[in-house]
Amino acid sequence: MLERNLLHGSIPASLASLQQLERLALTGNQLSGSIPAVLGDMPLLQYLFLSSNSLSGSIPTALGKLTNLIGLFLSENQLCGTIPSTLSNLSKLRELLVGYNMLCGPVEPIVRAMRNLSVLYLSGNQFSGRLPSASSPRLTQFRVDGNFFSHGEVKFRNCSAVVWDTSGNCLAGSLRVCDRASIQRPAAGCASFCGVEVGAAGPECGGHGYCSVNAFTAAGECVCDPNYMLNSSNSNSCVAGAVGASLASGSASVSLQGSAYVSLQGSASVLSNGSILLTGGAPNQHGAAFASPALRLFYFPRKSSLCGIELAFTAAFSFVMSPGGQGAVGEGLAFVVAAVASDKGAIVGLGGVGRRSMGVEFDSVLSVKHRDPNDNHVGVNVGGSPVSLASATAPLILNDAQTKHAWIHYDPTSGGTLRIFLSSDPVQPLTPALTVNVSLCSALKPTASDSLFLFGFVAISSSQAQRHDILSWNFTTCV
Image 1: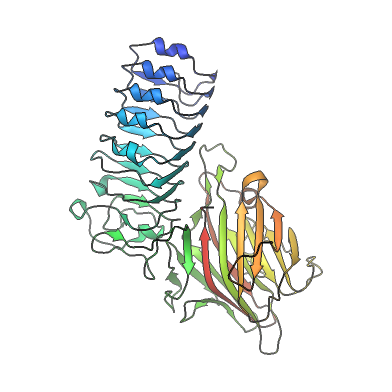
Image 2: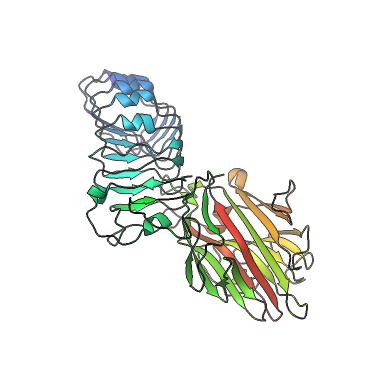
């Protein structure tokens, strides 16, 4: 075994001459290049450990000849392409770990043929299509988070013994977690489907699981039906949360149509039509609404990685800003991504969310001190700063009591780009109101142990009077 040394260069093809070798362990080195196809010519090999290197290229189809293989460990490399169909020949395979590469395509037919799997680790790739089968009776870990799976069924033979994670995908439809016969604990709600980690007080569906940041939608709240299935719409979007008419009123924590809850602070409340009222038109009000729990915006293949895999996102929402009874205006409202939820602070409420934050302000007050261009502008603020990183005149009047539609797109490539679109029509315009080069990683400063962030809205009416309503709201990380 040659694990965690300083080995570098490519894997020598001459290793294939070790015909009696049962275990090849090269984890945690600095190996690069492709995986030699000749490693498939080692008939007695049972374990192949190549994780945590810098290997590139595709997984060789020849590895499907390793019919005695029990464990295949390829995680945390730079492998691309699909999982070769020849791996379905590995009938003895118990552990398949290929997380945090750049692998793509469907995997369900291949995994379904692996009837003895106990550990399946596919996290942090670009796999798509149907969720892989979880029918192996030996299965104890099922981790497929951070991919693009869109549908399927996860039905564990022994739910309470399985650790599973389907978060950060594009799942819609219904997710069956287990059969009634396998339940080994009493019912206790279905919080896991709403993004809450399942532990000792987890739902009747058992085990330890996490499946937030998907597109599950139910009739106003997240529940399990008598068949232990989460019923949802057939939407193909990746909406993590959507505010609409099914919101319950009069509660400090109300369920969204999607897989998250919204937490209200300050003067914020939910109206009978399901919209969120941040401030009600009176002076000196502060209001905030944040999706809860926090959502994962970064995936870390290695703890030493600066920002890991940074996710793109889109926020789309409708809002109304209305002047007070005397025609006076407050400061406006802002969409926020932050580590801390708060309704306190100046600058349309952005001053209270802390240094690890990024906000898009819709501002109806001119502050020369804060270098505002006018009293009707859109700006991007980082770290709660009162001075916008960039700003531009809004293409329409913000404070006219009319419905506005906004779209915020973040692209992490090339250092990060934020584009803000604004319209009085529910169709996104072709030209953005503002385009800003900004790094979400630099703004939020995530770490491997702190990569979950809140998103929502803040507003203040200051000494003037202004009403702020959020009429609809959705958020996706699947762009």
